[in-house]
Amino acid sequence: MQQRLMQLVQEERVPHALLFCGSAGIGKMALAIAFASQLLSGEKATAAEDDGFMMAAEDPRVTKNKAMLREWTHPDLHFTFPTIKLPSMGSDHQPVSNDFAKQWIALLKEGPYFSIEQWMTAMGAANQQAIITGAESDELSRKLSLKSSQGGYKVSIIWLPERMNQTSANKLLKLLEEPPQQTVFILVSEHPEQLLETIRSRTQRIDIKRIDEASIEKALIDKRGIETDAAHRIARIANGSWLQALDALNTGNEKRDFLDMFIMLMRLAYGRKVKDLKKWSENVAGYGREKQRRMLSYFMHLVRENFMYNFRQPELNYMTQEEENFAKNFARFIHEGNVIDINELMALAYRDIGQNANPKVVFYDLALKMIVLILKK
Image 1 (cartoon, rainbow, N blue to C red):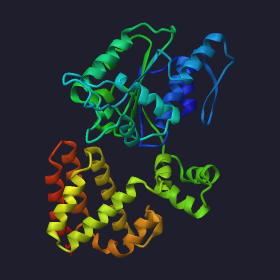
Image 2 (tube, helix red, strand yellow; image 1 turned 90 degrees about the vertical axis):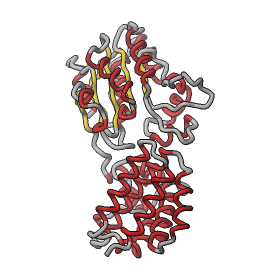
Image 3 (tube, rainbow, N blue to C red; image 1 turned 30 degrees about the vertical axis):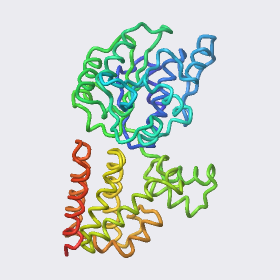
Image 4 (spheres, one colour; image 1 turned 30 degrees about the horizontal axis):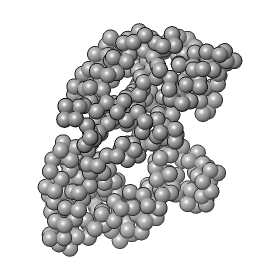
């Protein structure tokens, strides 16, 4: 992929808008940053390496550019990302990326592999959903209308553009239709299907491949000191994501809490304990909406894995040891007669939470319907 992008630079055929697509943790942002740095450094690439771009000899201007890029202070590099509205912000204020520049740079300095959950924590989010506002598109348009300070490209990296609200998306579309001179947009998306078709059609899409299991397993052994058997299992459940591999190493990770909530839901539903299910729904209703959607995504993953467990073919399953221990006795309750209905029920709850439905109502409804589905023969 680096070679393909480098060739575009060498041949001076850089598209005005690129769309990097793929799941979380596979290196999309790392590639976007490397490519942006190549464009802004002021020198042409001469060869490609596995972890980035190899540069030609430097002149003082190039040295200066690269120094600014290392500190994320290059004036022609612009980041756009989802933000939240803090209680300290005025009622008329729409949050923009500049409001969280300090937190963003701090996260980037830790490395280019991070998730929306980590970003929400860095911003100090509570129950909010992070979006890209219309005001952010206005601010980006203002920045890009200025002349390049270094006389070369201006690069706009938009992380998770699918989180733009309608106003922001329409304004970005106008920018893409009439791009400022010498400007390159790099959209880094996990769910490109959620973007406006008119936006997708004005970008050159590049699908980033997942990291292969062997590479993740080797990195876990070499860099993290994980035993071979454990590294192999983690590499399989990581599903090509270095972030998921690291998450599996975290003994206090969120997914273990979600597993407990899944087990509780299924046991209470099987026992028809309506009062306890109401308490369960009130408990998860206290989570922020982003966390609720992550939990529902995890639940759908577990439903799939438990269904596949019934086929007794280990190569089809991607579970942690704790998940598999539960599946040994539970998997028989997820079968051809209910697996589709359960998945659709959870997908509907996921959609409703994303549309700001009352979480107490959503989760209590899910819990009551689960009684019927889990007991279905």
